[in-house]
Amino acid sequence: MLDVLTGFAIIFVVIGVGFFLGHRGVIGHGEARLQFNRTAFWAATPALIFSSVATSDTSAFMSPVVAVIAIASVATMALYAVLSALFFRRSGAETMAGAAAASYYNSVNIGLPIATYVIGDATFVVPALVLQMAVLSPFIIAGLNAQGTSLRSISSSVVSGLTAPVVIAAIAGFIVSAAGWKVPEVIMAPLEILGGASIPMILMSFGASLTGDGLLASDRLPTITATVLKLVAMPAIALATGLALGLSGKELYAALILSALPTAQNVYNYAATYQSGETVARDTVFLTTFLSLPAMLAIAALFG
Image (cartoon, rainbow, N blue to C red; front, side, top):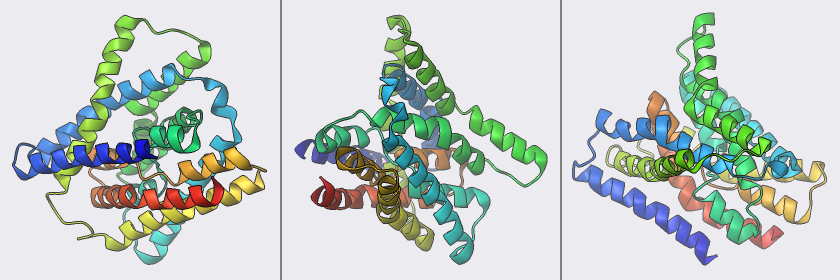
């Protein structure tokens, strides 16, 4: 458990560095800060995803645990969309940002240590990552990039989702892994260096964004809704789905823990890159990162 707490502490320290640099003006507001997000989106994060997936074991991709997480993710997104339509109607892009914040979990810098030290097995982390990047991300990015309801607008959004760098990187990495190919060191080494910059850049940009409007200063209801759905509804849906599929023991425990992970910083990165729903994404990431630990401890006490 100490390693898990260390993982959370590392994240908060890097966010704190970003907040300090933003407060001092080293990281500027607006366009200057967005350069961090765009660099991560177009270069660093795809490199991280490809280098992680290309060296993974694809045998776990057909696990029922992955199916449970997929169903819980999609159901939670749909539930947020319904609640938004009923109680706090927003644009399609803003609704997509909130739906992503409610369901898109942090599978890398928190998911990996959680899987390793709480579940005792990191087998399901990479399949969960590929599920997010290759299946969910195209829909999320298409929704964030939507500019209207015309056929041309919809087609453009779909293309942007399918051709996003993170999506291409996940698919390419999966192909390399499934085929058993070994990427030459002269290619993999630079990708690993680039990938190492992804999480720090996103976290520092996130921290710098906190120097603007205060937490829950706006979009309070959408943010609280996304937070509750992420930490309560998504694990509950995963539990019901897991039991329906006959999961028990370690597999059910893994599905519940992974579904209770906090919202990924990539949601904020996507929202900031496309400048839609940035406040909801930022505040939900912040709240779930703080509140997910007691949620996961409760799951561990009941099912671990």
